[in-house]
Amino acid sequence: MSAATSVSLAVADAVWADIKCAGQASDEHLSILETLFGKNMLRACKIVDERGVRRVTGAPSGRSLFLVMGESKRKEEYLCFPEHLCTCYSFFYDVVGRGEQLSCKHQLAARLAEAVGEHQEIEVKDEELADMLANL
Image 1 (spheres, rainbow, N blue to C red):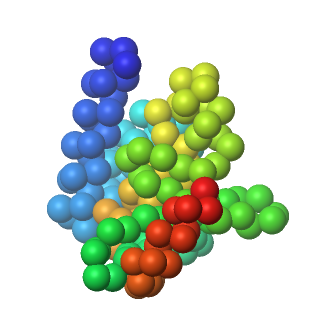
Image 2 (image 1 turned 90 degrees about the vertical axis):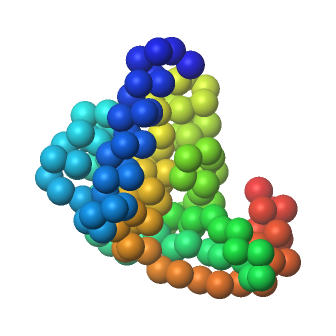
């Protein structure tokens, strides 16, 4: 990871923390995130606005993951760990493969939705959560 990437991620982490603390994203927050993540941030905002983020939490462990809707007409849903992984094609191609993006739009949507409390909560048994992960 380059020094510039590390700095960008540190700035983004600070902005996410500010948003979570405030419970809302200001225009300044969104402007900074758009500068860091470009068009993916705009698309993430659209997903959040359309209520396309669900957090699935296993009981009794409390472990969780996010399911984030895609933008295509097929309306796929992607399994997402916001800071680490998304099952979408863009994550593997643009983030991991080519290194052209820091995060995909689904990761950004999950982080934004969590920070501002704009996601649906679903609780399942730990076994069901494990099945979701096993089907990756």
